Length: 177
Image (cartoon, rainbow, N blue to C red; front, side, top):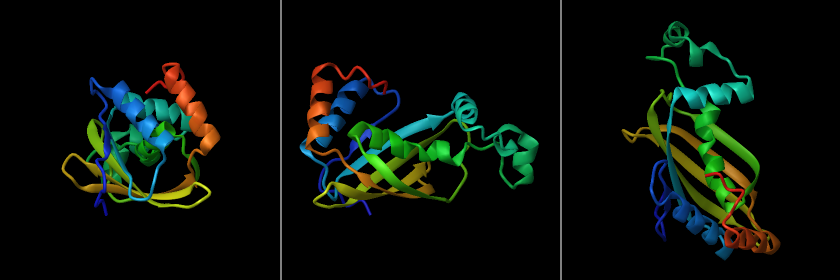
């Protein structure tokens, strides 16, 4: 699926060059995203992330909080929220200014706390109105697929690209990544 025509952007969580790489990602969006472009981001999910997500989403399913309950479901321990892991898509989409209109997830395997997940997203289609589609594969550190996803939406148009360029010139003050 990822026969790239260019080097994907890697955005590791603790990379010293993170701000520079995010600027490169935004600059890529300003130049224009095309079918075949690939992006990649990795993140290690911990209990702090899970608690923050539960607070915002109000998803207090005991499979995330209680070891006994998780084991009764056949898991080897408590698991991360699936949509928390799926939010890796929004890191990529948010950095390029993608306005999502549709997301579909297929949860393949559980993600446990302190596991690193890598999301590799490929743009599969871009039309003349900047409507785009993408597919993503999320893998754990062993290379096992934990989730696949489909994404559709609208990429930045010329006016949004101009604003993003101005934001970069101002040091991108709203970007907390």
